[in-house]
Figure 1: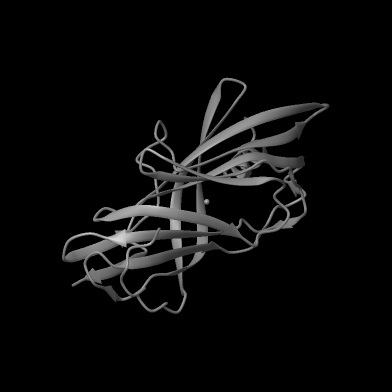
Figure 2 (figure 1 turned 90 degrees about the horizontal axis):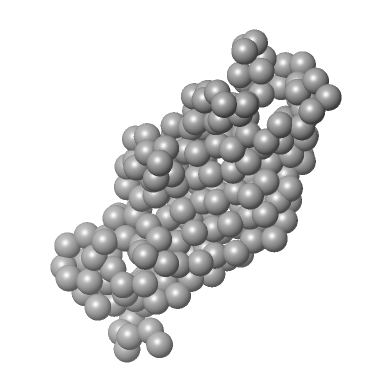
Length: 207
């Protein structure tokens, strides 16, 4: 396939507290997570990379058994209208996953903000918070995923580290479907991504 077609396919690779004091809120810190991505179309697989900037916050410390909130705020991004000679019509059915951190217990969660991504929902199951955005995000537009807030209870003395979800293409933490115009046909291009590397994006000391 032509290099421009490969680039077109790659673009598709684009949420009762305990009776203790709540840990003081922390200032948001900008981080960037790199994803390895894989897009598939017409029986062919194409590698891609994606960088996701985030603003994240969590308290520096919390007492064992105390309440804390972890906030993950994906930053605004733009979708190009064209890639090479091909038209990117839209991106849809996006999912973005965050594990509930080890040494913490999930209490509740919420979404706030976001724009241009259609209907959104945050669900938590099996220790993973999953943000879904139906889209569509049209080619040439700017969008922003909602902010995820996870309300947790701290476990034993030690640390609570937040990272993003995903271990490989068969267990991705970010998925989406791009719709690319190839000649006179709209081609669905599913993409799967996982963070590589996958560092901790927040760390809280449990005392």
